[in-house]
Length: 469
Image 1 (cartoon, rainbow, N blue to C red):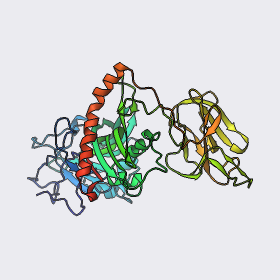
Image 2: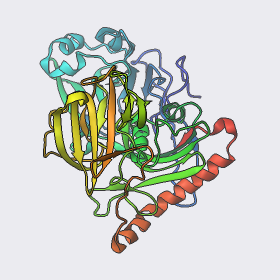
Image 3: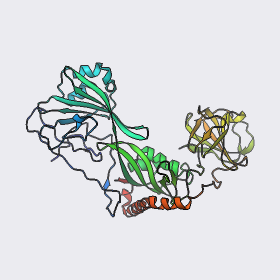
Image 4: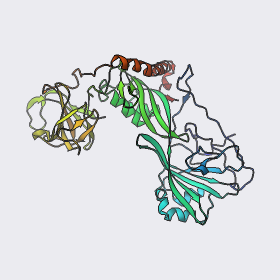
């Protein structure tokens, strides 16, 4: 029977090596060596059943555990086999708040003369000077209890030139001391699905479903031209998503790309799917093959609240009844502002009551204005080409403003119109050859979302916020 110890719940990392009960001493002969195979369910490659599991919760992994073997890394000495009677015994502990290097080594039961002094003094081991709570330290010992290697996984998931990697410090004994060097290991790409129902907020529902915040943000970005996530979300709305995550040795190492999403808002379905016509660059499309990226986003702030709508109002400073040419979004000073569509910067600087303002000219007769910024992004200048969602500045209260907010205008032929009511332009559909590729590439996602829809409709009401692999 596997002894989980007092730190329940057990390690829920996807595909992680099983936790084993700790022997009384690392030198004790005949150690118990067992492994637990954790199988995962394929993502509907065929007519597979859907297995419900929980997302890895990095805050509830065991503080320490012992494992028989680890997956191979770059260094040969890290590769061990369960059939090798001389394979090192690997212990692992997770760093707690307030930990010191001494307390970490003590939990690992490492008796290696001079190791602590080396780790605190050697410039090559400087990454272990800072112990981040939640990160893991592993140590391998032989049958005599001698240290084989020690490693500190200080960066479990980092984007590097299009790859997501795990970075760690590897320490090994040398002739009269120790050697430390940094190792970078690629992560494994996995696909996951999840469904959820809005109770109070989008982030609340996705948190309950175990969806990473970056995937939630992508959902809002991708469907921002269809749904106003500031005003339109309501209890009972549902979503189903297919997305990527990265893992390293079964441990969650960061989220990847949103692959497909369906969001039911007020009874109407909105969907998006990732498609790359050339296999290099890609974009999000509706299942009708129309690109979503070229459409205007409804708002320039990710999440905020509307403090003043388009139309006639009493001016808060001049105290006169006048027309308000845009929509005001209240947000803390410094909140990032993003352009709502591709275009070229037509104006960037100070302009009377607008304060710091950026005006972007889009294709055809469309332009947008972003006013009262605390500061404009350094690379935003007249003539700069900008892409939808690109950072252009930060919320402030410059010009005629009583508090920090964004004044956003949507203009057609230089005439302001209500951005919340206007029919926003859409992009062109795919050409016939691209459309054929699109149908072939996105059909699996349609099937996945259909199966998730069936799942969500048949689950009990209390179980509709769930994640699966």
